[in-house]
Every structure is written in structure tokens, then in C-alpha cells.
Image (cartoon, rainbow, N blue to C red; front, top):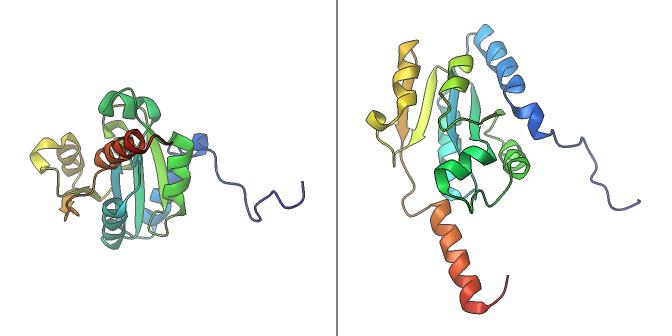
Length: 175
């Protein structure tokens, strides 16, 4: 129908984001002598803390791959009401960010299997984590990579945003 379409290429489906694109990107960057950076998370409700972390992570190397928890993985980590946004939406939003070069989805509780395939030079997490608590840190270091904690934008949390929204809906009686 005229007027209902969006010009340009159709968005890539999540099935195409399950690592194939990321693996090709990593191979190309590595062949050119570049530094591969990866980070991971649920990215359920993207907020300023996420964007700041992703931008800072991208500045540490030549490409940024986001390792994204699948819907089932998010539910196991966050509970039955999560994710709020389904995988296809989360992939699309992340891919729209200029600082994100590829998105790779993983179904496990941690991205260790995916990281083993990608073998990034740098693994980035926010400063709300401790390296000792991240099993991915030791894995990345096992092939000579580096795990890095970047400053965390305090007070930003998808869980807190969801809680505030639920309180607001309950208080105002609207959805």
C-alpha cells in the first residue's frame, strides 16, 4: 500500500544475527590487523547508561560486536516478565546505533560459547561488574585478550525503569 512502507533496505531478521554477520566482521577486522571489541547483555530497555557504555566500548577498538541474550536467556536471568522487548526489537535497536557494528545472539546464560567463536581482543563490561565475577574475563584472557570495565552511569537500570513504569501505570490506571 502506498504510504505504509519505509524506504530503504528491510531490517535484518534476528536469525541472521545469530553470529554469522559478527563472525564475518571479526574475520575482516582481524585480517586488516584491527582490534575486535565485544560486550554483552540483555539490552532490554535501552537507556543512556547502555548507550554510553556502547559508545565507549567502540572507541577502544576497530569494531564492536554486541553479544545479546536471547529471550529465553533473558527470562532465566531476569524472571518470567522479561524481556519487555522481544529479541527482534532489541536487535533492531542495537543495530541502529552507529557505534554497534554487529549483533550476535546467544541462548546460554553467559556468552562464553559465542566468545570462544569470536575471540575478541577486548571484552567490555560496565563498572557495575567486578572482573572476578565475570567468567568471560578469564576466557578472553586465555587467548591473550583483555577484559575491561568501563565507567558505569550510576542510577540507570532497565529493571528500575520497568519498575517505575509499572508503578506509574498502577498509579494512573493507564497502559
